[in-house]
Length: 271
Image 1: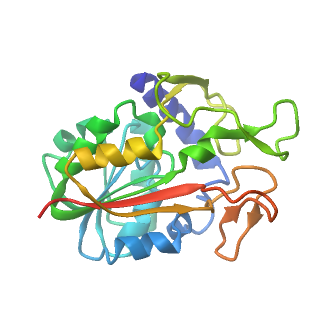
Image 2: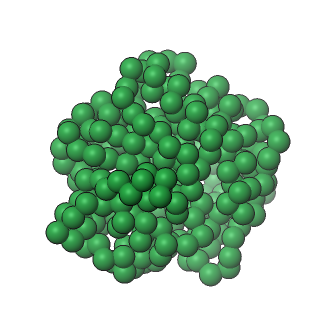
């Protein structure tokens, strides 16, 4: 299933490179993918070794490099890594990108340890085993290092429009919040961006993970949770009818229930 996902992300990459979603034909603005609370939670990154797991095109990785981090991006897709290297070169950014399954990150990075491990915004749903993932994160951290996850909230992923009605209608609980039913097989012919159908591999597999499962996996890996927050905005409008906020991000309109769109977790490695 992960091999199928790798092939699908390889096929998605040219669609994403041409898409308006990432704005690669405009002046790059990597910081637009970050909320102010993320930088507050992370603190200074200058002169710190940072690895961004499941980085895709590396647009967020560039934001860390711009702030002075010694940044490394790692992704499953060879096509994505090749594209990320090209984007970084055109931006004049000193970022190293490595192709590897996240579960193989320690070996792929030659046992290197980092001050900060960052991941999120659409990464955990592609991982079948969170315990193994959390142990990998712990093995990548130096003593006292920080792990920071900012991920789409599983409640958001459980919502969907009313069947048979316009997508801008009320949202219902249509999908699982919790794990337990195995992988979800999707036809990923079209992705979350604008643009044409992907050419070739269209099978994609996802796994549900509740917040409790994530927190427990991190704790069981020996990390100490320092921050756990929920946030009601997204960097892009997932549903029609979402409104832009003063931050430049998007939320459900006034009158709609306030529900979390993202959650963030910061954890520390033992000293």
